Amino acid sequence: MAQAQQVGESSALSSCDAYFERIKSRKKLPEALQETLTEAFANIPVSSFPQVPGGEVIEILADATIADAVKILSESNIMSAPVRNPDAVTSLDWRERYLGIIDYTAIIMWVLESAEFAAVALSASTATVAGLGAGAVGALGALAVGVTGPAAVVGLTAAAVGAAVAGGVAADQAAAKDAPTAADNLGKDFYKVILEEEPFKSTTVRSIVKSYRWAPLIPVATDSSMLSVLLLLSKYKLRNVPVIEPGKPDIKNYITQSAVIGGLERCRGRDWFDSISARPISDLGLPFMSSDEVICIQSDDLVLEAFKRMKDNQVGGLPVIEGPGKKIVGNISIRDIRHLLLKPELFSNFRQLTVKDFIKTVVSTGQEFVRLTPPITCSVDSTLSSVIQSLATKSVHRIYAVAESGNEVIGVITLRDVISCFIFEPPNYFDSHFGFSVKEMLNQ
Image (cartoon, rainbow, N blue to C red; front, side, top):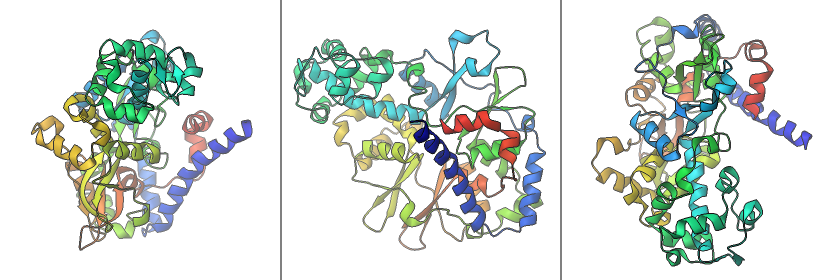
């Protein structure tokens, strides 16, 4: 068992090493220039990075419900937020003060598993679930009907949920032999079950923040270097890095990949930036992944399949394509899960809702806060400067490289990829500046 864990931990950091080695081998930049830039970032303190808009980091209490968390993220137009532990108000240790980071990825995982669980629960309210009586309770009962997610996390049982839900939704509405069939019959009432009925209504951020975690919360001190931040946001796959003052537990700043790209855009006109950004992206080895490696979703595929594919492959968005030629017709990102939670009318036959119909329905609302971002594209001849400008000004997290004719997707360029173009990791930097504790957290 210990040996298996060690192998898993080794592979986690090995994938980060492999990613950076691949970039290093493909970049056509003079080695002296890369060393100069890396040294420059190593001498820039984190304290010099601009504060978050408004000057105050938005936090979500661990006891907040999932519905409240979605509303806070959506209304604040942010992808994630640190989760504060209300039981550790007086603690001076940030490890006790914060439980982790809540983001749309964690919410997607919870929603996908809750969808099946709710369907099983409704069937349970008719006194039978896949041949088991409603008395099959506890963790064993949940496992017997194939429920392993929220049941384990929040301590729910199929029978308990079935009994609770029966009061709000007609029990025979979802009567079926299995969860998928029950879910097909559930329709609009899924929203009611998940966000308006107990016990799902009371599911808190605390109960899912660790079980459905995308990445750990790894803060840096204000006197750390920006090179440490850039490495965490690129090589080590973090999407955000909280900033704390030495000896104090509160988060003072919250540096995201998007914020770094915005900072790079503001460097336009400086010699060091222009010497790199004026080059075509092909000189930097972009896009780093080949056409065959790009994870896509067909417009006629189910929208739940799109979110599941993002979860399974740990990506933040997918190009929506049509036909065997991978012609791009749209874009769907991880944050779009909020529309399923905030717009209950989208839940009519949600299991049959295609990506195309999902996009069409959201766009048809005509409201600014539910607008979907169209796909942003570039060619392999585009300059890095133009890619950075598009990422920064359009507030997107990826750009799709397309063929000159036919809009065929041949690659994807992410925020992580762009940040990686400007730095490399000096020998022994990780052990000297991060140490064993960070390695443990990255491997969890």
